[in-house]
Amino acid sequence: MTREKAGRHTALATAGERPSRWAHRRHVLSGVIGSFVVVALVLAIAAYAKFNSNITRIDVSRMLGVRPTTTASSAGAHTAVNILVMGSDTRTGIGTDAYGKDTVEGGAHSDTNLLVHVSADRDRVLVVSIPRDSMTMAPKTCSDPNSTVANGEIRQWNYNFNLGGPGCTIKTLEGLTGIFVDHYVVIDFRGFQQMVDALGGVPVCTTSDIADKDAQFTLAAGHHILDGKQALGYVRVRKTVNDGSDLNRIKRQQAFLSSVAQEATSKGLLLRPDKLYGFLNAATKSITTDPEMGFGTMTSLANSVRNLGVDKIEFVTVPTQVYPKDTNRVEWRASADKIWSAIRADQPLPGAGTKPAVTSSSTPEPLTVAPDKIDVRISNDSGVEGLALQAGAALAVQGFRLAGYTNGTTGDITGTVIAYAPGHKDAARTVAAAFPGSTLRVDAAVGETVVVRLGPGAANPVAVPNRLGSDPLPPMTVSAGPSATDGLETRKADADICS
Image (tube, rainbow, N blue to C red; front, side, top):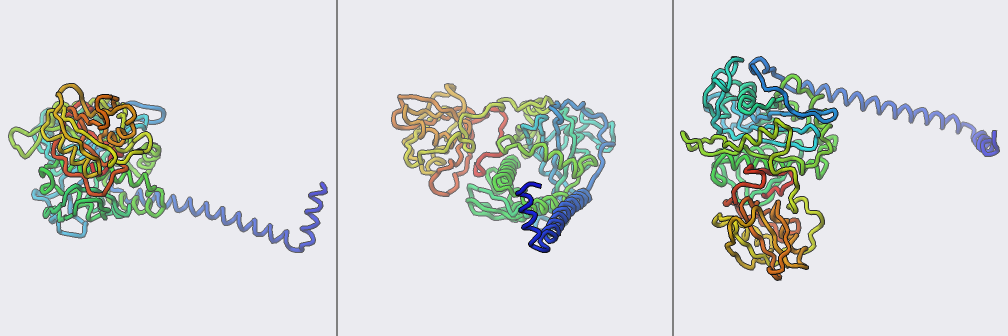
């Protein structure tokens, strides 16, 4: 025994019962820690069992018949995954008759249809919105495995669910696109409400007042945090906003989903045990899915994309045109094949793959010049009447000083070009933040004024981070036409929720 150890031993010995007390406390502490670990494991197992038992499962594989070959690529331990998410409009159990007790035909429709593609490298998520009023080929008899899209009939998209549930919708999608659907999820009105409430509400932004009797929903223009019931009304609003089409409702739904993603990421809502438990409990109690899509599969998939940023989540709507036999319906445009080809090959959408020079949500460094210090002239180089005036109104409400408008030469540029004189780059960066995907260009001829050139495919303006005031941007009723993604209108989940 060394001198140091001997001295410590003597000191402890003179303390009477101290060694035994310390040993007892250490034993108790070890027991508490061990018990805590055991309890945590038991709770985790119990929660897993509870969540797993919450889920309703229906096997629809027998009605699908011949299916596409699984061509999704693999990367490391993962393969690409395609999940068809359907929002059922059943009114059962939502606690109100405000939306009616049943649909006109009886049963439910899938008024919201999202094909979610998770890339094999877990670096991209593409969410494809399929308009409910799409008129497409569909199997005549969904329950018959030999009844296919090829020998089928024309049918409105959301009627597939009404006639044959998720199996009929999957069968139609696979027959039209050649995409293998790995899993499906059906969420009803009640589940949507409960999940929003479990998150503590979701922020939304509307540029105009909303008063919709069908959706039993009213909302003043501006920023709001909506609870579950309000959020349900918000995403259902259609006839009284913009042109009253389902396509504009899809845009609002995509903005809402973007807000959910931003909120959960920025504030770590789903990392809080109380929020996480409440959300998962609400979600699993409200979904119907295939037998293979258990809570374990969901957990594994969620874990594989845990490091995916919201800037890697992209929304796109199937491009459509008016259906000739019924102007209240739409049909898919030929460019929709670009979406299906990209998913089958597990590749980004055409034109996607490269980040824009400056975007409203991913500015390389903080903006240093306030809008009220910048003179902006807007040049309409798109050939679309009213585009410059619309952009000017969106800039003015944020504090930018408008120096006038000009009509440029159509065909010189595509997208948005921000021209600035040497020494004015910081001012140009603030302007560019209002135009997603814009390109900065030095031009000594523009002098003290920053010039915004809007060409074909130019994105409509959004709010800049250092804007002045809080009034919402005016409604965007004019579009510059096809976007940089080869005619496909896309939205990133990190985009401004007011855009």
